Image 1 (cartoon, rainbow, N blue to C red):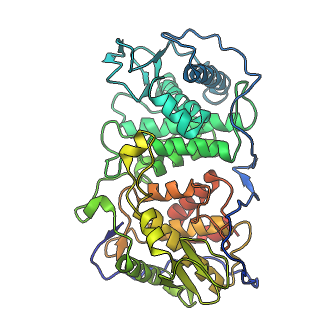
Image 2 (image 1 turned 135 degrees about the vertical axis):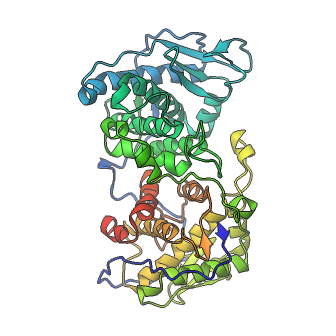
Image 3 (image 1 turned 30 degrees about the vertical axis):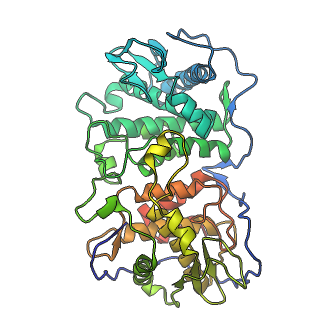
Length: 481
């Protein structure tokens, strides 16, 4: 985030409906953050099982150059066979043409191989998987990229990456139907490919795949985490050649395909993307690449920003206090808790500051632990508890199935509302990605109810944040009543 130095603008935010329901104050100590399992995921039931290659999966009959018996190649070839079956079925249904198989498949290991792939050495395409239009080729790095993805995020991360690359092959087969040509900006191609991947995963989740099964809880979380991992760095421009989008942009496109179908993906164009893209360069006053320290001064700015944003709610503003993050007479959800009896948001400053440390991208890319989740992840946890207090003041239940998602939605609405000239605090490039990193944690507080119970699924949590960001606080009550 950035402190603009301004005095703030009075832009009332809250427009959520008031439920005539009496709240019962919590009286427990620190909770374990059990997941709430009510609801569905884009119309599908919430499921829990180990996602990956089915024991009954057939042996793919594909010609792959430089293939090995490694687990990565086994997953990759099954992914290619599976996504090919998806497009052989879906392409005629949606685009009135037969799907032509990709001409060439290749596996490579930058650690040991020494040859060229699509005009580049394998060393130059390390940590990559790609579609090469000139050769109608899909290739993947089995030596560095796929092992890292599988170890960090599970087998469905490999399926995600190769499903995405097949999305590019689909674009070239669609031609004018996808609006893609040599002049099309990279970001359009990438958003379409992410969307096509979402449509493919919907097909898997519905049980149509011979090769894979994916749960709508932990399995989809693996997918979204891998999209988060392969994101552009904060400050990158969406107009740059090679831009793939922020994690927020990439998960948006994936969810669009999952919730709709491939025709929606092919309709993505530059005008659509420019109306919603969050990837942008840093502005001159984005000091420290948009990372503020988490301390008493910045929490004071956050207090003023929130009070300003929710000024027309007509209820007493919760006060942010550095009192350890626990509630003596209520549920504790450290590092931040909303204490209903005192109408305070109590913070463990040390733990919150640790969470707010910048993401260590180098450690992330090498599979190591390090850094925090960024300043916005920390601020958003505080905002989530603050809006709990606003909802309590309005008589809106904050301990039911929708409370966590409504809260994440309000965090998104606040983020969009302060993204304006003159705002005391403004989001910086990459801030929404920091929120997504927090939302994908098992114990996410941004999408948790007053007792710290988060919504069960990262897909639903990110969708709620997105709903508020794009559609405002009014959507939070209509979507999560």
